[in-house]
Length: 114
Image (cartoon, rainbow, N blue to C red; front, side):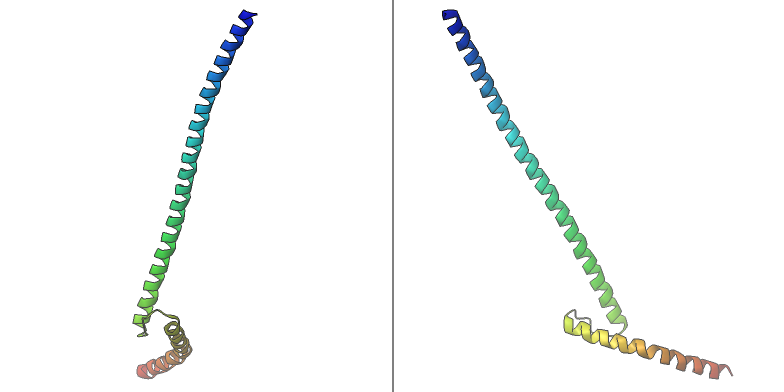
């Protein structure tokens, strides 16, 4: 009987030691998982930053191109909605008048040749 009690106590100590080891491993795994989640979140945030940076750069390039066109056409280069609408209307008027101007210049060219 004493032998059975001794064996049971040793088994209990062994099981207790195993449980402690498993608890430590569990804590390590939880820590690793948290670190991986943070790394994943950082990676996602970096992707978002890259995407937003690309959008900003594209908008900046488009703004520069728009300003360049406005300067070429001697339009207002300020960027706000009312100025944009005004510039748009002026460009529409220019587009309408271009064929007539081309026609006049062609006629003038023909007259100068003869």
